[in-house]
Image (cartoon, rainbow, N blue to C red; front, side):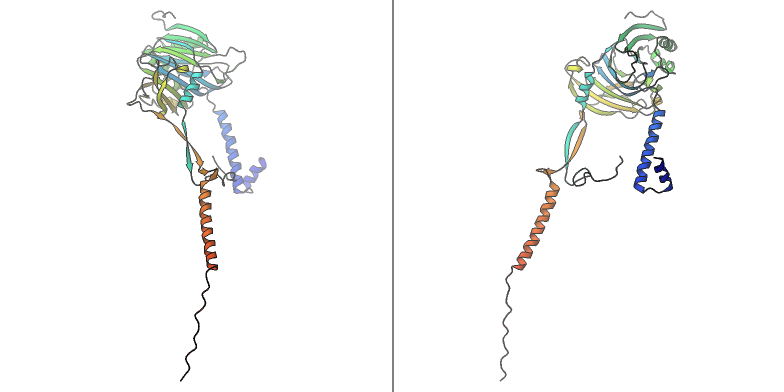
Length: 383
């Protein structure tokens, strides 16, 4: 490699090979930079940090929200990577919540329901991956109520699998942070300031500490989902605490409600993208999430390149119309007949016709009758 770089500097390497070496060097630099800026925490809802001396990244956080007009349910599942043996996060909720383990099959069912429709699209002329171009060498880039006045009240505390869950009330954000730290819930700096709007609105809190029971285990892979249930007259998805994140955030949200739903605002992120909208039956894993029978499912994706710009929680409202939507993925194929490309048959047939016409004309020219010249008459004798 060192010799290649020296030759690259001296200009002894051909242009194409020089480009490949440069791409390899840039890729190695990108990997090194990526290891330096690995996020301390990343979470699409709430705030999450690992214990000190370790790191963890939330590769994907997906939530399902069910709402029947009176009761809201949120089922969350995290896919994480890192070497942290434990971590913690907090979720504000507008009223008293119950917490239990969710059903992982729910997410598989939703992925199947909202998957894109695949359609075939044919093209006449061959493209890069079609014969005769396929394989060619081309470069590409390609509980009891708390006592009144207590700064922090413990509504309940349960152990659910690898989760230590505390349900809390608070009248003082600083006292809430102190309680969390004393009880093993290590949370990010600046949390007390971000909790003030929730304290003012008398919201409650679900604090979750992720600590695998197996000795020496670390938080890695897809974790068991958690299911929260609470009363709410509006469909709200808490997002404000995500402004504490240090890296870009992404949110995948499935919403089950009587109608197609949409966020009232972008809350500081990019425009939410609808990836599916349509009526579904709430049976199987979906049972009990948004009433019984038929309901409307809306799937949303949103990215937050600058988390500090997040300025509130998602409040979702009914869209103007229950317009269905489903993504379509086209699979391009070369048009064939009997396994033979139609373009080849067309071109070959045209060439055969032209060659046949040429042969016929040549043959006809050779076989044409030879007309003898007219007889030459001698001039009359002179008298």
